[in-house]
Image (cartoon, rainbow over all chains, first blue to last red; front, side):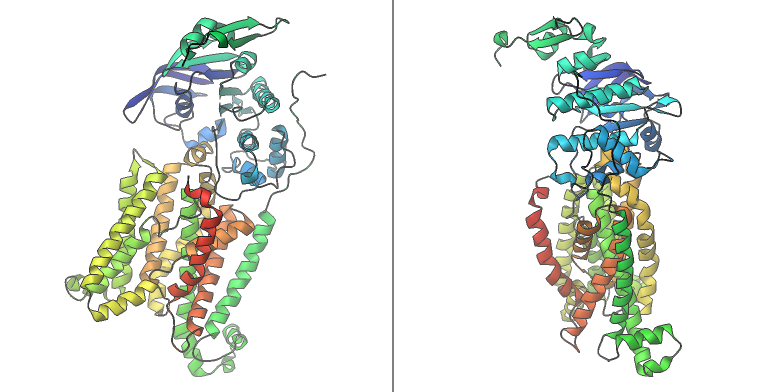
Length: 264
Length: 362
């Protein structure tokens, strides 16, 4: 679905990303993790066609640097880290912005908006003013807008991709799990998800594939068990880590070794 | 028992918060309001006839409703004035709404990005130097000298604005706002220099032009600006999708499928053209471009599909009313309309600032 080879990004004369190669497949949740300032958001911005880059990247075979915004909008949705609005939009109207270009032919707009709001747990919020919501609620409204844009995980028999830049950072644990479930279900239904995550345990639980970025380069890449090792994480985050197995044996967890943490 | 928070799947009912029906209804009400205001505007002035008589004379062939002198006054003086007022008011409000959408800031206005100042400098240059240094060039354009110079000034400032604030085909809104402030200051300085050189007669002309007025309306002026302003007003709703998407930021607009760079260019040129033309014939009429879009957003919401046509209608109504006040308050003399709009608009602007101070911190 998404393939990127030797991606480099220079911003203001500084190399932010160098030589990044990665792929994200349909049916999978691909997590991008790494310390603050490692280039995760820049990578998403390059992969969504937002900023120019060297190297080549394709989404469903379409070259990201030459494909029109309109065509890309039919194949992928992007949830930004934060979105502020200066005008008094209602929640209904914000979600409707996801349907701006009408690439979603033959849909009943109010029904789609209601479905999207219900999915993110905000049924009944349509009338509220966006600016009056809490940060976490605003984040979920934005996700509803993105979902409205690319509601079906496949389009013309090709998978669609959800790009999520820290989708759960401002959410409580219940909504973190709810949003991660939505992302996983989207992937399980044939779409693809690329998400920047900070929570290593939710990454361990939900990700099918992990890209660990450090200083603008891919440090490790593969299945969670291969990437989320104490050695990798200690090297990248600069903080001693323990990786353990939960008793049921289903999943593993990652804990920082706080008592031995190096003084900052 | 489920170990994970369930993802709800089925919506129980259609969400509220859709203001489409109300917005459409408002457009109808505003259209009727504009019609009524236009008739009122045609009927008001130094000669006296009732609005009803004027309306009847216009829609029927029964010319006996008003006398011959009144007919001439209406067809040659008030009609072009009313039409010019409608076009200028609509143009100011629509340009304001487009700029605010583009900048994601309810305080943005063509005045702020230096387009009006540039257009003004063009006009002032012609008024002051038209009789001397520029006389040969001005002679070619005759009565179009001021409109043409203002239009050129508006275009020039837009061009400089675009060149300075755009890099690698991308325009930064922040740089653009700052460039606009610098351009405005520069145009203001040159205008000040020209005013310093001006003689007494030119100073009178400058003062009257600078305060803004539709008093000197003629059919020629109407014909000169209509081909510029009308296409902008009628084609503006085609920009609605782009402007709606832009309210979420340039990046998200692009994610939603808008060709942001092309869209910005179109929007900027449209605003420059409409603003240049309005400044040329009516000078600086302030605050219509801020007040009208802001009021309408409060009532029908920020969806540009309805906001832009509603701005055209309410902008026209506001300007006709302001012009009527300007004509009536010191009759038989007339106040420049800019004084009226600033008297009402400036306190309103302060009120918005007071309520939205947080926006200035962005």
